[in-house]
Length: 441
Image (cartoon, rainbow, N blue to C red; front, side):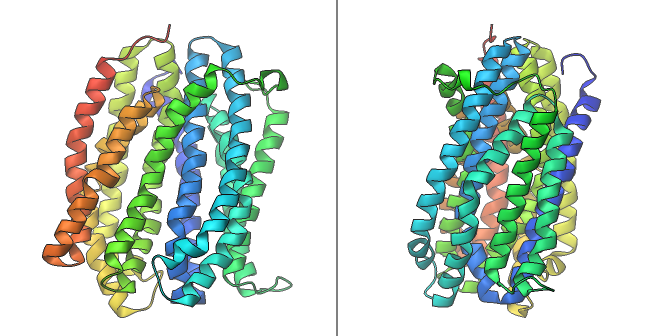
């Protein structure tokens, strides 16, 4: 972490995460592809459920980032017992988060879905999906907590293997459970939810086996269950990180409200875009995940110059990845939208949307990298400020205003304009925050 050349180190940490997250994003697309074969109503219900599903994942990943950063910082500073406490208490709190969110989200979904559509079939399909998939929330939370613990000590290959197994099982089970192949029952959208849940449980089981069989620098222990100040440190990073990841859910819901006034096709296109965005951005996010434990460890060890180099190299890496995404969306927008619908009008709307939105992909590397680096440095609030600009403060007023001027196309233009403005703001926030950082010791 502290002595190896930075670029090879980042590659060794990031490539397993890029591979696993590419497979995960591929799963998301394949899942939506099979659901779209049920009906356009089923795909629309999945689009409306996505913000809440994303919020649950955001809570798991966000708090996991807090666990990851605190463990890595303490290990860098040579304070192993503190790292053990963070791992133990972080895992227990993740389980609690999963149980609470499972109950709340299942209860609110009928009313939530009814806010965005009057189509009873869409609401019914969405509720059927949620009642199953949200039941697995505790397993998802624990799996992601284990993922972040393994990542914090550099065991990225174990994380990759566990995630791959869960995603691949999902991909295999989707058509079997949705359409009833062989001895499997035909479950429709319920089958898609069950396949997702089984994949999450499998991932958790593999992490538990790996923990029991591997020697790790951190250990879980019941003697560390008593709450102390480390919980506050994890939440101080985890809550802003959760909000960073949950803000897109709020954005999608707000934009759904704006676009629903025009037609359901625009809502569907927005949902499809976010499925595709998952595929395009997750490789960059894989690089960010690989960066976090490295930058945290070096910050804890007081290696400020190395921290600066890590940031610069990751910025170049994410920029290249997002440039590739721009090219794909600009050249093949109709084919990408056509994966999820055969409706010619919807494909035409989506073609315009993708070509406009992708203008901002490359410049967004600045805000994505800055936000991730600040989380790794334990600076949750500055990271949240960047995300608030990117997902709420700029894009929502801009989308509303541009829609009044140019119709629904204004929403698509709001995306790239927001990325340009946020990139400028994030440069200032990152430099200001890092200039004020203090040594952990």
